Image 1 (cartoon, chains in turn purple, brown):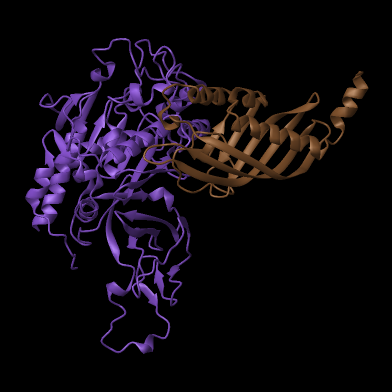
Image 2: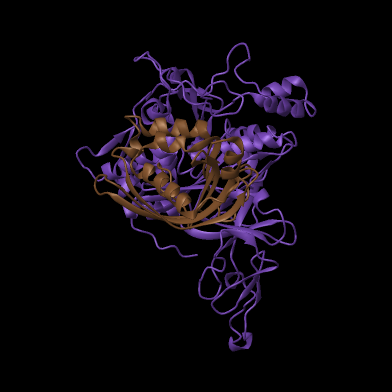
Length: 443
Length: 174
């Protein structure tokens, strides 16, 4: 496939990104955004949905990989296919709904072409109008499939991976695999379900500002000051917690956040330590529902394993460039770039199969409070992302400096560990950014 | 008023005019930023619910834009009063129009009534480099309980015409 490329030398990206800073143009230059869609979203493994969203044959959800519209479709062979949402004839999208069941085929509204739910062209009306040199059975006339792999139901698709070549997603995920396992293992049945609706919010900012925020433990006491009680503690964010996380402290010089770590890995991935401290006496969290969840896990696993499962092993886990899993509140957040200064975020509550139903109700209700567009927390983040976008037009200073904890990271857990308020995750994201961008420019 | 007279008034269908006055008064409290007084209109066990899907059945198994009990309302309102609520510095101004009220059901046993109405809200938030004006429209369903010569809100359900859209910050109640 021919891809028309903007003529940018790979060295240009290295000039925009230094070890501890990035040039403001990465947030506001439309030409750079266009290249990101090709070189990052066109090359990386992109989260496109969870298998539980399409349980039955004919079920579909539509999404995007970068700016390219795709359909996640359950075919009659039981497999999930990711298909370009683009009629093989004149390129109209064939599916104009967010989700649903299409039966055994998709039908283009323009000239009535129909496609099987694995993408194959089923029928083109008045087929005899095509001279023999057009083979309508060829893939390009169908809904072109995209390579997709699943790990515990998490579907990752890759626009440039071949459909046939062997590929092991678990190996590719590396240390981040633990973050998916930790979430799914919370379910007594070992499986999660993503069918609880979706919170959708719009950011008037570049997609990277959201990504840079997720493992930023420097911002909560300031961005989210309005959610704090006088004690500096936030409202409880999980049922059973007597109180929420300690967000700010009286000590002005040393932050409690620094006691938490940030772990950064190859390909831009990272996660941060839990923000909810567990008290020594184990009394910090208890309720009838929590106990019933624990009992359901104990019915499946030995006590040591259950203790391990219930540990808060991380808070936000970022799968670069478009997925974040939050363990404490059991949700999945997906990032969808729409333009250089516009990004849509979708947040899905996770049902832990086999856990008490009330626990799921609590997950849903707390997600309203923390991640609805009307939430008490997210709204202030959205405002800051928008302000960054406005500020990025200034050339008073050309660089955004991610210097906190620079040079202080240490090798750990297969990657590097920095202190909680360090900016290690952003520096790490830009290392991956240069890799992806430069690789595209030189190929 | 003696006991039987009280019972008689509790079981009488309220006048539409009286219900309409109540809805207008409620909306005005929001426009006037008298959030605490607004919250006091709710029953102690009252809820404010804004679904995230037009035909959403349950606020428990699917996420909502808002699903606030009194405790959460108090938390949200105290945040609206905070000097560092960045999403509301400067804060937005609103105008609520409440129209087409209809009393749908009245249960003389409990004194509960359901009232359907429609609303149109214009919101303007000053900002840099430019302010943001938005229009919200949809349907209200108020479940009210007669209380003295007025009402308490048992449930205010707000279904925006575009409730399943992708929104920028929604800091204020509809």
